[in-house]
Image 1 (cartoon, rainbow, N blue to C red):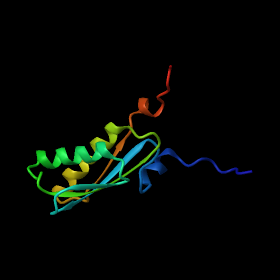
Image 2 (image 1 turned 60 degrees about the horizontal axis):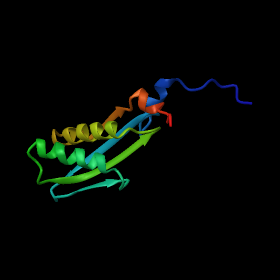
Image 3 (image 1 turned 90 degrees about the horizontal axis):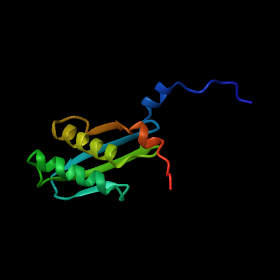
Image 4 (image 1 turned 180 degrees about the vertical axis):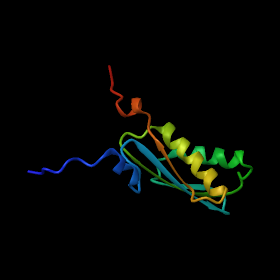
Length: 112
């Protein structure tokens, strides 16, 4: 039997892809128009990245999004992370953003 205590909650923050209930988006800016994403079904994050580029006056540029989430990811958290990742990349930063999924979205249950 395993007698080790569970890891502290803070240990999740050091993971590469975020902890449970976190969305992580990495954006790489490109001179070629068009946006791509991995995994390909992250339409909300792609639309948020396109809106962020347009708001910064760079709607003619494109890039690639890498979206990863653990736990039940809320689209709102992925959109916010995508916007922040684009802003970071345009300003010369690392292009990575992590956003926590709201607690209520993690414990949402159906009542019907």
